[in-house]
Image 1 (tube, rainbow, N blue to C red):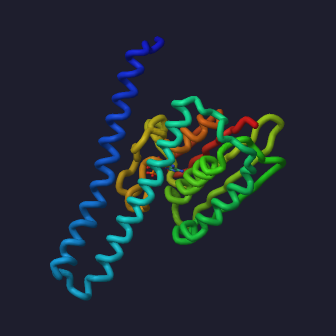
Image 2: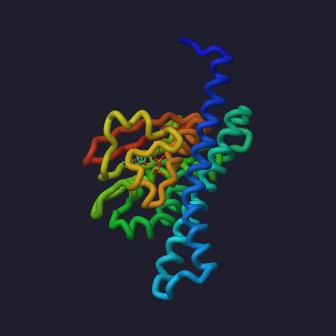
Image 3: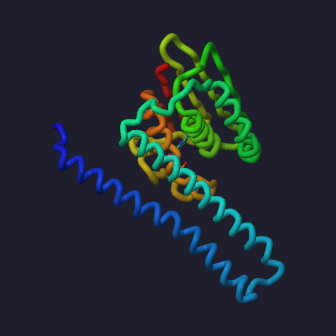
Length: 240
Ligand code: ADP
């Protein structure tokens, strides 16, 4: 059945309403923690021996808020590009191999902390036309998830393959995997399979939504293959 314009408008309105409600909730939680501890500090109610722990909670919650705001800005930029049909207006040649290499270097401390071994393999010319900042977000979010939802001693392999008319990006991990019933939902904004694991390791629930919209903006296809306790493989094929 083809959706009528009015129905599409209602759905867009509903999606926007749900997103705003989620964003407010997600921002309110860390702010409540920060405000609570700030009040204790202001009133001189913190014992010196608790100072270090309280500062580190405030620091972590503030860091989480920064990631969230960063992700929201990236998504709203993508929404804007897609809604105004601005496709390709800001695009320029970008080498995905160079992008992936920078991303993995940035994620190295996170991988080390989680005892995950990351490797990068590139074949052929991996240049596409796109927006480097958004391409970086796509590769960053896929690689970060592959590390975050992994088990100590596990691995992450990022492969880039230049083909005639496309560049294929494949991110494979040996991690927790995603159950079949969750697979269609993980690209939704704020959908998390395991709320606590995602939140505790700094996940915002927006990573795969950014990947999906980033792929859409670049006209790329997206494929998810996953098996619980075996691992996950996400493939993005960018047209040149
Ligand atoms: P988050 O910030 O929670 O990681 P994402 O949108 O990036 O949000 O991912 C949504 C959910 O999909 C995650 O909370 C996690 O449960 C699941 N997920 C994403 N990537 C992987 C992966 N590589 N392996 C297992 N589960 C994953």
